[in-house]
Length: 371
Ligand SMILES: *Cc1c(COP(=O)(O)O)cnc(C)c1O
Image 1 (cartoon, protein in one colour):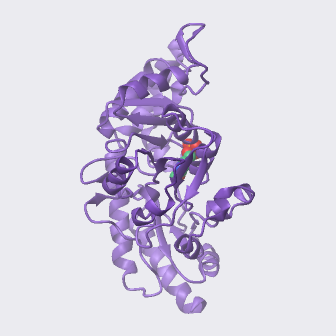
Image 2: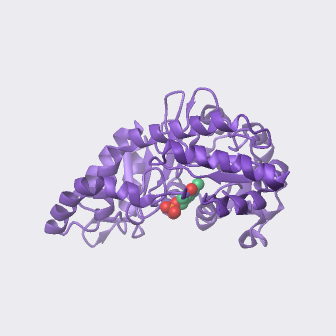
């Protein structure tokens, strides 16, 4: 049996008939950059998030960057975040002109540890950027209290958390803004690149709408120095069609995660992911911890099971950050865990038999040699 890490083709096939007439209508109208399909998706996605405003843009990295600069974060500022993320989280902070200050994570959830944040706050700190990692919300209420106590912005990296909840509230409901990615492999993925900022702040929304279209107040009249960060119309049409299926797809991921949980509980050598009580985890990734993970991954590959590592090198240890103050961070939990992470196959269209095969293979591999 073959178990891919992710099967984008299965999902594309399923929605083809819904997307095709939309694409034909869009092409008729040449609504390629911005336009009615983008506006429709923005209002649908805002409603889905339970937040007033959604501003579509070109990708998730840009959504994070726009949220940061839209809130006035720039040169000389420090922004607190986690190092066990995709590098985009830190890049957005760096390209806003600020310095990412990495704080260690909670060993159970792998999200930023709120108890370690106050020690990292300096007079230059302007914002906290939690990452809702693997589809699970960081402790957003505690982070809000911390941010308010110190006069900081709270900007959520929700690139892996479409539909995640904490006490009934999703990304953007508690933070000043949340940034989403619609990269093809995300829980809600485009047929290309796309992203969005969601916010309850009407002024921020207005500023970002203008910014992403060259700061135009009307055609060729530029009220501010902006940027081209417009969303592609075709992506918006695809995302609208997919958004209708997202709750059902997230439910399937949750079912697969529960299945993995159940089967893996018998294997002592595998540390299972932890779901914080009161949250809805949407399982962008199902990540376990094992010793000697390279051998396990290789042996699983030989059995037709494709795994990933998210992420093998924490950002403060990346060559890209070696010459920056961010590299000085001491993050023992992040560093130890990064050597043990294995992401198992996870996507809505997985079959029960595939989940069973993954776990059977893990059991065989661990008995054959890893121990
Ligand atoms: C995917 C991702 C991003 C970046 O999104 P892009 O659309 O690829 O630019 C940022 N942060 C996290 C945590 C991600 O997983």
